[in-house]
Image 1 (cartoon, rainbow, N blue to C red):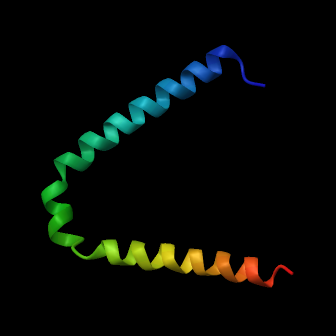
Image 2 (image 1 turned 135 degrees about the vertical axis):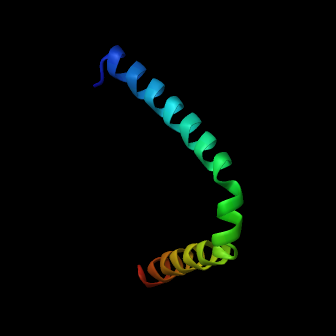
Image 3 (image 1 turned 90 degrees about the vertical axis):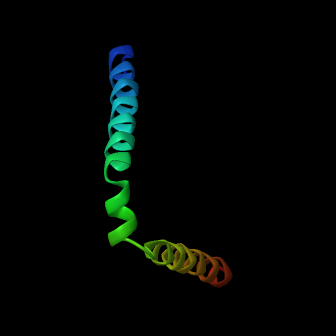
Length: 62
């Protein structure tokens, strides 16, 4: 499906992208803690909402 060169490029790109994102996040960590305090609750309730939709879909499937 994919050639060896395409797979190698995808792996190299993914690893490089993750490394750059880690360095960028660490550079801005103090700003993130100051301006995005409490944002973990938004993520928690969003995931809870998605899980609720999945449960409703599963229950109404029959």
